Length: 433
Ligand code: HEC
Image 1 (cartoon, rainbow, N blue to C red):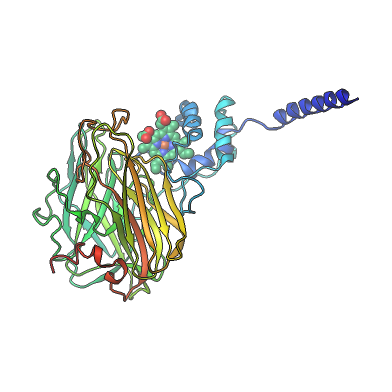
Image 2: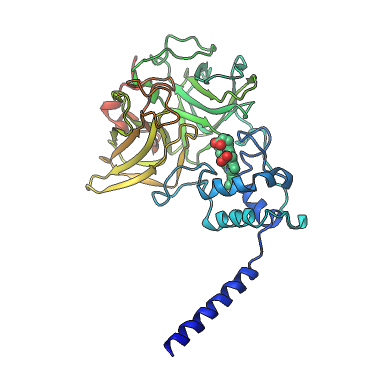
């Protein structure tokens, strides 16, 4: 009796499996795959953008079906490095398990096109300003000439804003003209009187000299460009202060793309018409004093910053160079409780991502933000330029950095020195005055 029941159940299960296998048709490109590609892949996989191949039409995508399955199952694409479960973020570039399953089943099922009548309308992408018409456009003179090959170093350029009065920036966008070679552009603010990079002439691109242990690289970040990353748009009531007479320091990272190219980047700013309620400012937990021994594969470096006033955490952006391995942000609250804010278990120099919280998080006065990074300076790290080197802080990509950037919001009329405390007073804008 018992064995009969088991056998019967087994048979039922088999029939059920066969039925459901028949009941679930192979997904098709037009109906099932294209909507996923439009939303999660086409921002980079279209002509003129960062990815080397376009995923718009069936004929373009079909040869990549296997590679697409592999890249999404391994969670290599779309690039999103935050570990699931720590923090909720805006524009999270993570496919749902159902979306991964659809792409995998499509590839496994022979990658059929299906009926083109099922296709959604083509996704619209703007090639102009996504923030709207800027109030101020800063042109980068001259157009940057890029070599066809070779390791692309960070290139810096200082451009004066020409602002005669303090302005509050609500939206900002970096607009490279050649996105196929532009890997990242960071735009920092340099207030008047800052000693940061004071030896370099504005308007002339330069690669900084080796070394330079000064910590002014933790200057305020205004906006960044990276493939697929949205422009900086603050909600109503929040803005960033740009002091009269400030310069913008641009840091370019180009990918040598086996073709010589010219890039002419622009920076667009839209100002808040009135004094905002909250000032948003980038602060940093950074460590400039580390020494990474040669041939070590898990060297730990810590940094921290303590908030001297209540503030809201808006976003985080870890920054390491080629030996960066992982990064974690923790908040240690005045109550003693510790919360992990962001974990990037596999840091990737090529994807310096910015993580905007879905909802701002209150960090009460006295909260300590702790950051921990590990570096792989061994020969097993394929990105490592030199495992024999003892590595210290520096602006070149062959040197290292350890910065946990944080955007925080606080009352606009409050002196920022009251938020970040005395230990960070040596920042540009405070120093040299
Ligand atoms: C933020 C930009 C961006 C997004 C979004 C993105 N890709 Fe990519 N993708 C790239 C770039 C750049 C490369 C080439 C460099 C590399 O492989 O890292 C690439 C390479 C690839 C490759 C070839 C890499 C390999 O494993 O051989 C595949 C396949 C791929 N992407 C699939 C996808 C799919 C599928 C999506 C959407 C689910 C997607 N990508 C979303 C930028 C992006």
